[in-house]
Length: 304
Image 1 (cartoon, one colour):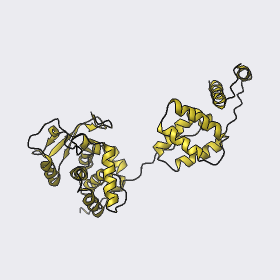
Image 2 (image 1 turned 30 degrees about the horizontal axis):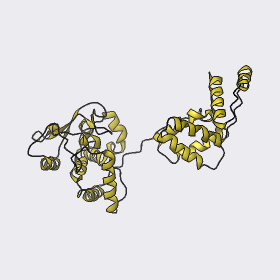
Image 3 (image 1 turned 135 degrees about the horizontal axis):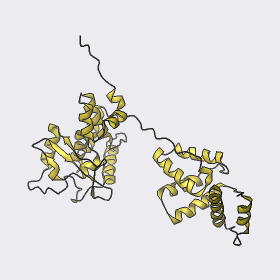
Image 4 (image 1 turned 120 degrees about the vertical axis):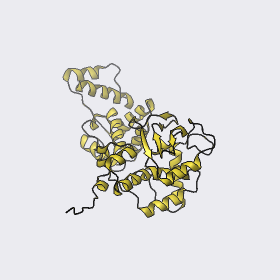
């Protein structure tokens, strides 16, 4: 099977390079001897990947092509292929590096023995209270100000609040019911873990919801919409977020920091793992893993 794969790749590369043997004698000889002489070069890799991209275009293949064309070293063997891939790993997220490796393996066996880098999730670094206040002040003046503040006050995922409907807001009881989220194509879909949960509201969060609540409530209407009354694109929301921070002279900060900061605040203020896990929609194990630094910050007391 391995030889058949190598032979297929050789034929594929010869076709791309314009040296395909239409009589097939060259390839028959390779089958008889069991040897498939493969000569590699960066140029042939670019040709193969270009054809692959033309047939099934993806962002990963396009990005790899760009990096290949800008790479000055040769790629003629597995050692050189690994050196090239290490330059990719050093410049992109590990999740992207894995996708890029898949694209490279599709067109060259030089990458077949390279393993995808293990993803090391960075420790949660919550915003300080001063940082949080400065950021919320910068973003509060926009149409999306209440949404940004409620992300910081609830710890909900952005997609969950974007998919929240008024029929799921229970202000008298002091919670919202998260049982769906807004998908990338702006449709209502299930939550990340396909479970529903109650997210309890602080007095300030309850006040913000009351100020947003229309006099005549449609239970199926979205709580948060754009300036035209349509569902909010998460990409568009992030653009507003970063633009407001930039205009205020504040460092670039991920929108998701509001969620991790809120959950960290709850842990630091004595809420149980079970309570915080429910509020955030995590399992307790995931919470411990992601927030290990925060969970471990306990104050030891004498009890006798």
